[in-house]
Image (tube, rainbow, N blue to C red; front, side, top):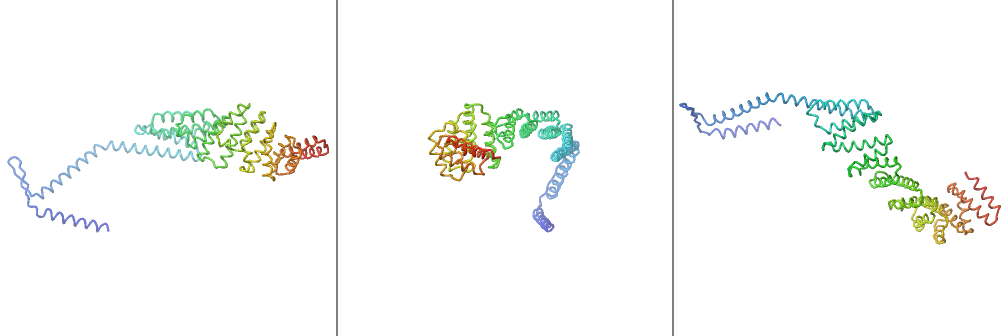
Length: 415
């Protein structure tokens, strides 16, 4: 098919040429001194075209001959560039394959080829990547001196080149990760602080910051970072909730007095303060610091809407209330009775309400609820033992020594 098309085009050119030049009767006269040359216009045009073609061919031939050394040099540079690129790719493959000694040697070979070729020395991004690969391999080989030297070279070069700016960000993140491997939280945080705001908000940077703050025993900062990660969907919903709660517990545990505990509580995100489990932990910590009134104030909103919480959350709120019963006032009685009627089959709620009524010396109502809680095997052993001991104390208040003995025996049997 292609041959037929070319044949048709050739016929078309022949027809056009015959139609154009066949009826051309023009004459061209050339004068040189006393000489005169007459030729047809067609021959003159053909000679002119041929002469131009010969001149252009001659000029191209001369340029090819004079540019031969330049092309040879460009070919040698391209060959060395391909060799350097192949060495860098080999270093990357060896690094991911866990052959760190070979990866380091390949990266050094790539850098040496580039350094020996002046035309390649301006590729700063290539140089930075080579230094980072060499530094990463040295880190895996526990050669910290060589790692730090290669990392310093990469950072110094990246700061002076706009093309290598993304590599500089990667170098900072890698350096922070290596600092965490060295258990150096302060250096990791310093490196992360040097990142631009946009880079610092990336998921990987936030993960590194979370690890650094936890390693540096900064639970409050770790909680803020974990909250950002949760918003960026860095964790699943369940994992994020568990992590945020554990970090909140660590923050609350650092409080040494009530004022410090109050500041930590106010610094929490509103979502953390709305978490029943976190509020229960804060109440328990406040009760340990002899601030039961404030602990109950933190628990009151949750007990007012106890039906909106899950069973596990109600169990945590019950434990928090039991820890903060000292000095509980009569204003809590309607709230507690409503909870007991709303959840009559939940031992944790019965346990908390029974302990609260016993604290208010309402022994008849308290005994019934505490017996329900003490006999329920689904309740924790510590809570059941405390329920039996409270029942024993109530029996002693009523001078019923036999019942008190049975309650003490039941508490002792729990394991």
